[in-house]
Image 1 (cartoon, helix red, strand yellow):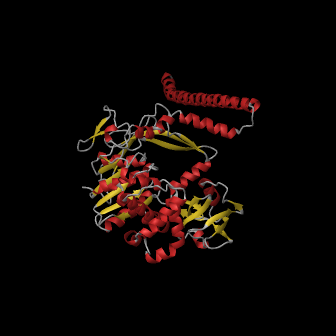
Image 2 (image 1 turned 180 degrees about the horizontal axis):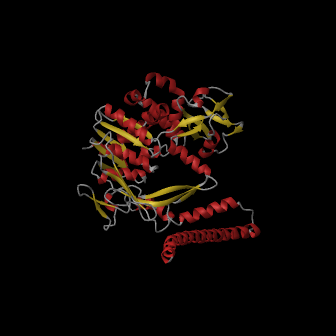
Image 3 (image 1 turned 30 degrees about the horizontal axis):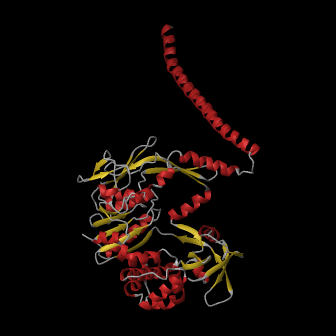
Length: 531
């Protein structure tokens, strides 16, 4: 009997333990839920309390949603300069840039003399299909006047973009005709590109310029690499100047094309996320050829990941000026109303271990004024003006010293070009005359130019800005308010002709008719071409 009792209790003992354990879990969950509700209530009570006082007593009518958005922005801004809030419209605009397409009418435009001027139509796009052409002036959109009303570019995009298959009505004035022509344009998906241009500078050197890292960048970069290697490329100049970053995954895939299998690309660390180390695979298309990466003070984030990986693995040479210094990783979190916050969750580190994030301890305003301070301190003109924290010293694969805490320092520094012999050129270039004259000239003579130069390559190699065209442009510049006493030496004259040709080329052949022309006199590229 005792034995059975003991057996009975020996079976019940574990059962009681399980009940106690489950009860403990349930109690913990209830307490956590109650605490969460209390925190949520306290948070909402305080916000609601302030909002009620504002709505009850404030002197003017207020927009409650705007106030709440400003409060969210203030909270995030107090954390770091890159934790941000975005409403639904801002999210859509950014997605269009990074995802590789948007829905619209398919034109490139400039606003000149308070008028929307069509610079180019996207080949095969909605506008070209209905007969709109470069040189047309858009004067009405959906029967509303848009000429002579001070319209800005963001307003134009808002009017012309819209859902696929929706229709927008535009009124067009065309050179040589007095009447207004009306077109119904059915919007469609318009592709956007992150690789501006890729071409062979000579028989061995290829050039690729990436303007940002979006979802289509790896595919675009792969196509460019394939085409250039088939053209005999043994040296690649990868231009990341002015590239503000974008998707981390896109930067990693670009690095994977350039680094050998097993070489580290980047690693990330954060308080609440696991450390992640990312290495190159065996699938790279350009792992052994000579590599040069160009950066400047506007190269940031994903651009710095690529430059840092190339530098720390001693894979290539970094040329230009010190990069921006953004080493923080953001996670996008969707809110209930389709707005989002981008919250910094980690820091990324280059393969040597350095975090290149510059300090933001003095606040966001000072943080973004850093580029101005660099200029004032002479950094744009001399590498000797750059001072790194000597305690943040790291070593590349072969033992070269690199520093963290403030961007990527190039292996070969090139000062900001301010040639004193080009004063006249700078003065002309800083006016609107260049763009306007090139636009007017292209509009008037596009048919003749394209019949003589059927593609960008023939235009780049054969088109010549003669003295007659040059003098006509200078006269136009003076008529637009330019200096009549401008003294133009031979060097300035050469550069004026070069840029005039490049802008005409861009209007007719997009970037393929532009970069191969201006890059000829680019000091950073000239440095990259030196052995």
